[in-house]
Amino acid sequence: MAHEGGMGSVTEATAVLPGPHAVGRRVFVAMFGASLLASALLFAFQPIAGGHQYQLGVRVTGLLTLIWYVSAYRAHWLRQRWFLGLVFAAGVYVAVQRPLTIRADSEIVAAYRSAFAALDAGQSPYSSGSVVHFDEHGEHKLGNFNYPPVELVPYYAVSKLVGRWDHRVLTATLVVLQLAACLLLRATFPRAEARVLLAFAPLLVCFELHTNVALTLLGVALVMYSCLSPGAGRARREAWLWPGFGVALLTKFFVIPLFAAFALRRLSWRSWRAALVGVAGPSLSIAVALTLMLPFGVGDVLRETLLFNLVLSERAKLTTFYPNVLSGTLSWLGVPGVFPFLAVALLGAAVLWSRRLPLLEAAFFVSSVFLLVSPTPEPQYIPVMLYLALCACSTGTEPQGASLPAGASREALEGASEGRAPAG
Image (cartoon, rainbow, N blue to C red):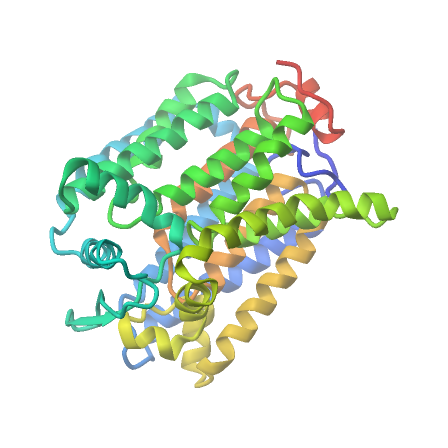
């Protein structure tokens, strides 16, 4: 059943992509079509001095488009053995291939090791100037830590627990966290066909083992569990949702547009009381995030994470530039300084427009826009996008009417959209 977005509550769990309105389809087609064209032109001409691995932009844009297309128009494939077999085979391939390509001396291992050393010395890794980065030539440069604070916690704890830090410890930690996200998917949709979840599990767990996306995947999984899991009333779901968002905001920036889209849907100006209630939850999330930043200095954290990634010239001093759809196009046109302003404007417009969409379609839309306007292509987030698509396919019915794996019942969906407890 398709429900309209509008003023719906954050617990509104609704249909698969692309939603009930033709305008939603047109926007998705235009967005992915323009992005595929831009990334293809950048790959063909490779016009930017200092730009590397243009194929990443094509790969990420292509995979996003494929996930959207299957979710929107071919969701009935989730009941087909041939499709699940292909998905499982792809997952087995990455489960074998990814560990074989992990480098013992990778930048992320070195960056975390030096950040841990700063913590052990009683310094903040956001101001110590001792965190290792690799430039485009592989040379080591020293700077500050550029991931939000929550990204330190599990890896630092595990390094102390096992008494060392290397690529093996990092990989094992990533696998455990990503496996936990898969288990949450099962808990969110206990009535879904187990074979679907098993087919996708290797991809979700092993697609990304080179960098630290696991906490973001787990954070999104917790948000989806809070919104969509059966047997919990609205009050209980929101008790989990907003503090959880506060923690998730300090994993990776992928969560920011998701949070903004959820918070916007929560707002209502029907009365001062409704407005106050609508602001309370998101305000709690922000308060939690600020509290977690305090030990490191809120200004230092924001400067070394958010601002570092928005200003291309500063980012290029410490990292290699991989042109993305927007950043690459603006650099090609000779106006890279416009990037932070245009990226924020486009993402903000996407969040505002997403209120017209059903909840899960809105989540997929703002996340897609985020990936397209990010400074560099981010294939690490493909499992997160796949997770969002699987949630959508498990809670709705395909526009063409094909039957899907049973996730939440129709009664549960209707109850969720009205704020009632789903039938468990």
